[in-house]
Length: 604
Picture 1 (cartoon, rainbow, N blue to C red):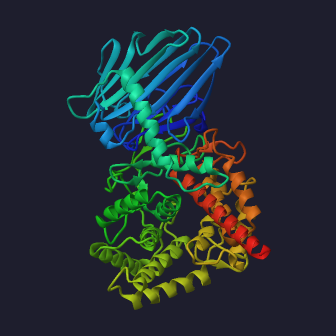
Picture 2 (cartoon, rainbow, N blue to C red; picture 1 turned 120 degrees about the vertical axis):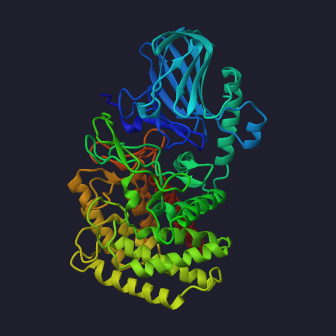
Picture 3 (cartoon, helix red, strand yellow; picture 1 turned 90 degrees about the vertical axis):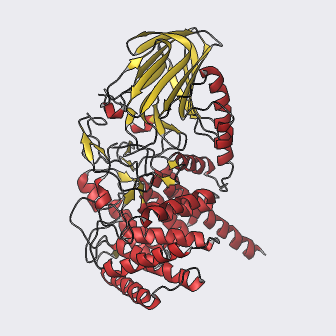
């Protein structure tokens, strides 16, 4: 069993799919043609599930980085016997640039350069299409390998003749020499197979330009710019360009508890992430991405209106049924699940998320068409009919339904925003009086039953006694002022009961019972709560810095963090964690500017 850690991986991608490259040069995860497609390489989850490794023979040590402002990965191997540079990327360019060239449907390029040597390089190419279920018909020799897999043709080309022993080949590079490998996927004939070396040089220039052009649009220029930009680039990697959907993560079944069964497929788009995601994109200057994401979300939810599914696939369809693969799992964490059974849950918070995301776009000038007007009104009516029902809540446990406080607050948000949009003249013919009555009943219910006088804190469920870090969002949504006595009491209680180490928070009391990790986004929610008035600017900065230190050497986060070891847990990279980091950094920057303005006014 591999002893690799999740933090040892680095994602590369092209806005359609994503691959994970290990610190030691092995691509252990790749799904083509989409990031939710069956895997071609998946040794991340089972040693026999396929990989593509390129590494030097001998005792060289790897050190890695992304080329500045890109998702192009470079690993430098150094040792007494030589130096080797391996650059990995998925080819990306504008559609206009692609049309001017011989451009494959999907292309992953690996360029190997020898700095000192000579060095022997070991190449292992072991694809296992369709989660290892598809028959492997590997053909070719010399510089090309062809694998006919279900639904497409996988071709590996190199600009050197490879002498292979089974799936392993060796080559020798002398100082100044290089070798390029081009892996392509074609679902339609004829397959486009450009010469590897010339394509690699052209594609590297275009790909770095494509990423840097996108990165250059970012407006944030605060002290954590490098972390915020890496987070934005991670979210962009998880954005499916053809539809605008943003997947929760790039993988399935990376465990929330090592050796345990908390392993889920996150290669889908969760509606509950909508509001926070849109706010982060808009604030960073990525309005086109925010527009595309909300358009995708409205398209997806329109198909199931007035009911809303918890998650949808990248095209806005309901996911197929969940099933398990007979794989070993990441470091023995089983089962390995494909698809996600949470899609059938009732999560009432989703309605508030979608409507709040639309409201954010309206505030910057977007208009609502008649069909969307009717759909949003239907969602409001659904909330009025159903907010008194129990649901599965934001954390979607596979347990009996409960009256979650966070869900009730998001139902309040749904009606509050609809009434705001009606008042602004952006929506028409809503049943205003009905919405207003239900909004006020919700507020009274939350203030009366979601608050525990004995704990001095908001609690997870109405009348309950468990704490939940999602309570920190009550001020984010405008239900409570961050400076209020209730929010300060809630924050103090959360810190006392749910913080296992400085900078970390469990998402709820049950995390401790389940032995899962601390939830990365909860730490950033706390930092943002402090920045919004719950604490001092210094306290917010300190919380942010303590949470951010758990990112890996490339600045990337998964969903959770093991509190004792600091090891990353859960699917990777995780959009929600990076959205939380971005949102907290933005709130801190706003607080810093407010503080500076007040100081300047006093000085005058």
